[in-house]
Length: 427
View (cartoon, rainbow, N blue to C red):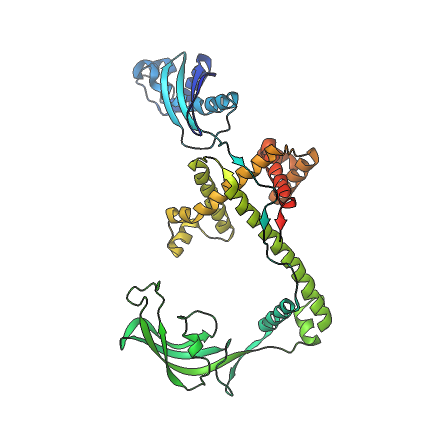
């Protein structure tokens, strides 16, 4: 391979002129011949046994040229990009053959290159993160939730509907005095406060008792999915059959023993809940800090980024989703049928997040470069060990699969993010 010329044709786009020598091309032609001869029939020879010279005489010397060029050019392009010290982005290459003969061929190819970006102000980023403070109110909320989960649903007859109750109702909706399609239900269990019905509907159930028949007046939201009802006033005739309430168990030592494997008394349980909350809120705060710093970094990136980088990230995200679905025993096509999604709508759904992830990665790589961040041998070893554990493989096998240069970049990016966090002004 001989790199004859490098020409920048536009931002993040270069054209390479590459010459492939005769020996390499002849070896590729011979390789293609050996693959294809099995299906070639020439009069006077058994199928698959015709000599190459005979095949070329019958079909022309160039019969294997096109496939031989396909065989050679990927490696030739990679070698040429390496020689030119280009970091390329996977994209559809534009290929143009300049000349070809048995002594080799010359071609031009246009490639997308990694963008040059700038970033300023990555130290001292100011963000306001969610609080990790554990208050008495939060502890009581967790305990109440545990009591709810352990509670039972019972019919109540001695009071009216309250927020949080389940009201068993018949209802029929009318617009301009006429019933409308989809507006009727019988013995429907509606959790008051769930927000599952039109705004204002559930509030008007509160205060009524079992056996009551009454009207509920509401206005459909402007963005309601049924056009003829959007923004329209409506009346619902309602009959309340039954009120069900969740009865919570007493908060005592017996309850604690039922719901906890660590505590035996109420006081011990409060301390357990407090400890768990501290851990959960601390993790939530760290996650929030990371997300907000990522948002800030993405906004600070300056430079023209190839669309191919965003498209490639979307493709990767869809593959990751497909893998998660397979782990759950689901198929991507079935998932799309159930959700009414298409590949295009899924790609649109991922586009914004993909753009952010690409920008954050570029930002952190640039920061690592500016700060001369280099992973140590110990850090690389730890990363390989982590991946080996994740994929249940030997470390040496992981090293064969994942190039060291890729691991170095990943570790450097992680260290760059730590630097950004350490220098951030977090409130």
